[in-house]
Length: 115
Image (cartoon, rainbow, N blue to C red; front, side, top):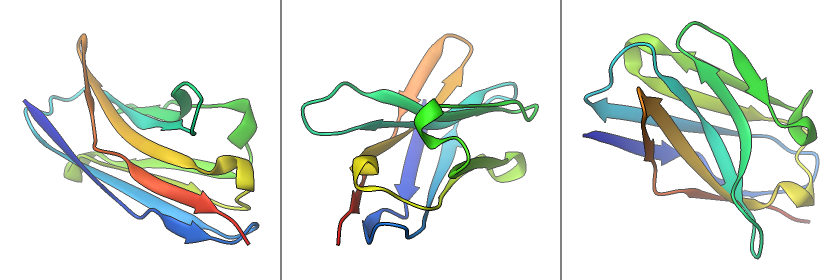
């Protein structure tokens, strides 16, 4: 089993920044993929950014140039630096880790962008 603990959400004004963190514990094998999804009210959950243990990354077009995903493999932790936040970034952000064919999810952290 894998447990994920997220932190770093909150309320921020448009143009502001937040940094999300997600620490994985348990049977976290190497070669995994860690990342972030988000779900806004009334919408489906969508990919934000993912990163492999080898350093490859993939971003949603809507966040390219504003968000940066990074990992500390020694700590099994993934980060999401979010800059120039917009109201449309408001959502619950979920951390995920994929190990072989199994996906694990965090409890979610709320990000609200509003003046």
